Length: 96
Image 1: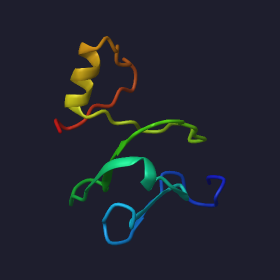
Image 2: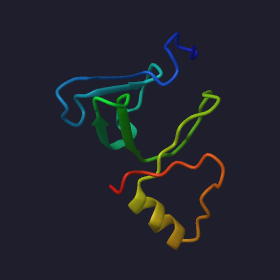
Image 3: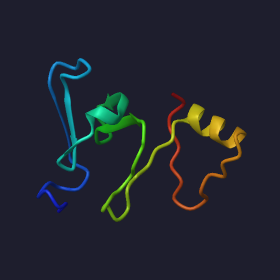
Image 4: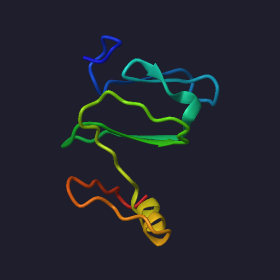
C-alpha cells in the first residue's frame, strides 16, 4: 500500500479529457499537471497498459520496483545524445 492507502500502481482517470479538466491519479497523487500525453492500451490478452508522457521537475517515489517504459523513438534519441540504457531489467517501448 502507498502512503495514501491506494494499491501501488493504481491509475485513475476522470474528467472530460481536456487539458485542465482531467484528473489523473497515480497512487492517489494527481499528476495531470506534469503530463504532456497519456495513452491507454487495453487488450484482450494482456493487462491494461498506460504510457505516461511527463515533464519531470522532481521525481520522488516510494515504489520498490517501478516499471519504466521508454518509447523506442525516445530511447534512440537519448542514445544518440550519449545515454547508456540499463542492461538489467530494461524496458523498451513499442515504437511510438
